[in-house]
Length: 324
Image (tube, rainbow, N blue to C red; front, top):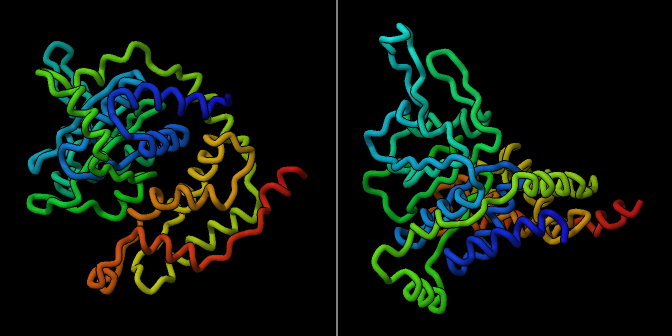
């Protein structure tokens, strides 16, 4: 079994014992981990978003911090602030939660745009600027944000620049009846629930994640696949019902996730099917729809399918090129 497959198997076993029926979500987490990207979890309250994030953080080891977003949260509450130390007679930085390895930003849309913007530099550059000084964050800095898409009172929609910095948006829906019964049987006792997320015996070896990334980097991508993704991005920008299409950052995210998807299935080259498999999670949250699309109740996921329908699929160029 190759490193990427070992990584997925490890997460399947560990997270699957705590968050039931999360197979597709775990696959998405693997895509994000391999690419060093950030994750937006979207779903109604009470379906396990926070539990999933805490379980992943426990599996990764390192320092975990949680930011509970509220309307009065300030940027310095995330980044940190300089405080005067009378003993040393100088200002010292009291570091905020963004200096951790894994940061859960819970209910991200409940804090205002000014505070949301504190995440932009951290997510894109892995650094924070405080009082004209720039501080590097952890090498494997990961943001897992959650939001409830069905509640609008007291919330602030994420701006396009913020959404574009999330490599993936994953939807957490209600579990099927069998898994919901498992939840009831497992967590109905007093104290059951989040305590299990931090009770994992051993974190994933960082060398395994590094090996999975190296394997992914060796996956072959034919020129036709680069052209295919460029054509998809162009089609999204020209679609009549999309006012803002896929950015270059989004196209790069689509390529990276397709490469990682190929590695997770044990493949040596990327196929158009790999691109299609990851497209909904990579593209849907980045597309800004026109008012006409909203009035007609056409969702972003349907428009992702419409964009792909407009682009010709390459004829298996990857297999031919990889053999040459």
